[in-house]
Image 1 (cartoon, rainbow, N blue to C red):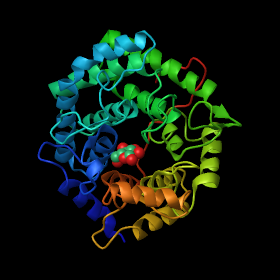
Image 2 (image 1 turned 60 degrees about the vertical axis):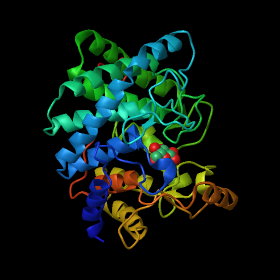
Image 3 (image 1 turned 30 degrees about the horizontal axis):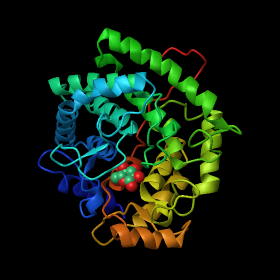
Image 4 (image 1 turned 45 degrees about the vertical axis):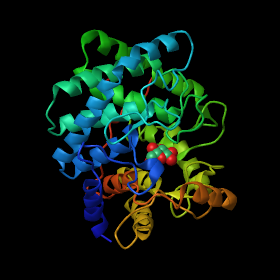
Length: 369
Ligand code: BGC
């Protein structure tokens, strides 16, 4: 279904709000918010298909939203300096309403990966011709200050779980974001960011490698498919690094079916296979020149689209727990469809030439390139 590429672009544009925000999933009530993580991947994919204006209005909306809430940053940094995690009142939230307000119902809001991803996506937008607006410069500085001060504080991971741990995927997003925006930071902040960029990979190597592969969080022997982020796209590890290769092997062994599960033991909607993670692995295969393996995954994704070309968040096969599947359907309704992030990752994995990543091998005391 070669058509799904065009259809995916149409779907992403169709659901962009007038404000520039992208809801995570327009018909799934808990996801009628804009997440920095999902939204940035959507804008980034649109940049890859030349939809510069749609991407730009997302970055403008999000920059204004972050700046409106940036009064919280001082408190968050102060709490962190005393060894406390920021709470909902002090942290920058992980998701906002489509008008740029904080959500009212309780949510696990302290998540740093979306802020790193936002910097990384915005930098890409600027490099491919997006205009450097005043609010972008300010948002880049505020977010960088926030990440430089908080990256060592445990927070929820990109699945909004395990807030008492550090997660290599989150650290990779912080790394990728700070590295991408160095050139737009004032000298003192750039200096601070450089120090983080040297220390952070050492923390990952020292704390999160077990049996030669990365693990999803401190204290766990398990992999998570989000560990693909370490090389693709954030370049904390080189794609050829043996630790990364061993991590991918374990992801293939433990999490691969037709699609890809998040992690063993996942029970959200029973813990099925995720479209966006299948696309991520396909992207990796294409970068490695494994076109056949990539095609197989893309074929699986295409088979999950409904008649309108809409992709779901996950597919309830190979479940960890049938009971949890029923529980979530009863609680929140059927699995979200379309999930905009699924379409964004499909676009990235499916473009004629594989989307390149920043590649940078890690050595002790390496200077940032
Ligand atoms: C996922 C997040 C995602 C959010 C919106 C959550 O269930 O765990 O990764 O950002 O949904 O799509």
